[in-house]
Every structure is written in C-alpha cells, then in structure tokens.
Length: 326
Image: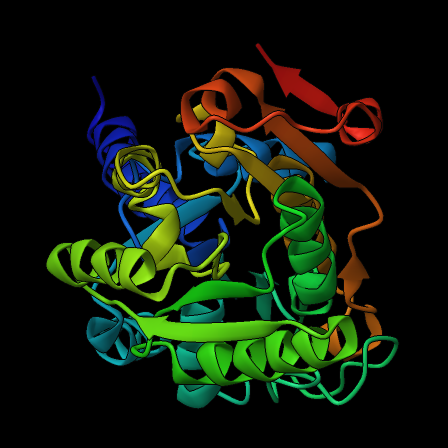
C-alpha cells in the first residue's frame, strides 16, 4: 500500500468513532421522573412509549430516556429533578403530581410534560388548561372533581351510611390539600360527614384502618396519590379484613381485590403525554399545547369482593359500570 493511501485509510478509521459519537449526541434525550418504581410503572411506560412511537420516536433508536425513580419517597424528588435538569435534556416528563411539582420548581426553561390526577391550575402547574404558558403542559384526569362522585357511589353502595373516611398522604401537601377541600365541599353538598386520615407508610395505612373501624365509617375514599397506588395490594387486603367498602381512582384497585374504582384510564393518558413529548421534540412549544383532559372515565366493580364484604351492589350501579369483575 502506498504511503498516501495508508494515511488516508488511517484517517477515515480514526474519524469513524468521532462521527458515531456525533451522531449519537444528536439523538434527543428525555428525562423521566417517577415517584415510585419502574415495576409499578410498567404498563404506563408501555403506553408512554406507544405515544412516542405514534409521534415518530422509538426509545433506544432515535430517542433516549434517562429515568430517575423515587421508589415511594417523595422527599427524594427535588434532588432527582435537579439531577435531570443538570443534564440539560430535551424534554422532562413526570407521571405524578409530586414529580410534576418537583420538575416545575427545578427549571423554567426545559420543556416539561406531565400526567397528574388533579387540577393543574389549582395546583399551580399551569396558568390555564387551554394556554398553559411557560415551559409546561401535559394531561390530567381531573380526579379532584371526582370527590362528589366517589362519595355518591359509596352512598349508593351503603345507603344507610352518613359518615365516611378519606385516606390522604400528607407528604404530597399540594394534592392532599386540594383533594381534602374537594371532598369537604362534596360532603357538604351531599349532607355527609367525612373523617380525614393521614398515611404515608405501611404502618400508618394499617393504623388508619383500625381508626376507620372505630369511627364506624360506612366506607373509604382513597386519595388518588401515587403512594397509595404503590400500596394497592395492601389497601385491598385491609379493606377486606376490616370489611370496609372502599373506592379508588384507578381500575387496578378492584383488579387487586378492592371493591370499586372510578377514574381515568392511565394508559390512555400516558400515551397522550408520549405524543406530546414527540410534538415538542419536533419543535412545538409546551406553552401552546393545551392540557389534555381525560374524557373517558371508567367505573369498575368487583362483585366477588362485594360478596366478601356482605354487600349487594344495586343492579342500577352494576348496569352503569364499564367493567364488572365476577
């Protein structure tokens, strides 16, 4: 080989890794902040990736994702959010209210896409649903407005009851305060009384159920908080043990043996935020993307659990359910 050809070949070979690295750095990177663990998010992550794919992005091919998980400890969220912000990523994503609030507090420049189970205006995340403003948008199930419906469903299930309990997580103060106000207003409108019980650990959940029995509450509303989502199995088992009719905002609850759920489909909402991330990566601004509101709300009943609790669910209630587990 002539010297000139040899030098040319070496130059091409040595440049190849640099070109590959340059190509890799052009691939956008998303930051995903989760309040719980990846195992609990498995179904929602599949839906999120479907939304990304619909928008033309496939993880590990033309987009990368950096995940950070708080594993049920909301106190870790600010530090994890700061870590993601320091990486100067293209878009930040959150799947819970505490995670969304942590990201909003950490940056005013990097686009943020959230899913929350409450009212993002009341929680201070956006200025309005149609024009979010600033660097943030997303999707909401607006379950803060479901307080009245939850109490109505429990009242229909246990018509003789005039007192109910609500389980709230105090380590999510914004969501806890908003849902407490919503349930208090709903109770006044229905001429009912609601006893609020705090829980943010396994042990505190157990203690709360002993208090429910002492209060002789006719049923239990479980706050749509990610902490309680992570404890669905425990909640369903304790509700059965203490014979407490309970309602939760997510269909996974009756699927785990709880009595009933009323709320939005998590998969639909996470597919939506995946699509929003794709649109932002293509150049759209979060301030101009309206917050997507869930229009599909599902009522799911577990008749087997009702029988265990000694409750006969009204036929009218069964007829109105989107899904009945027998």
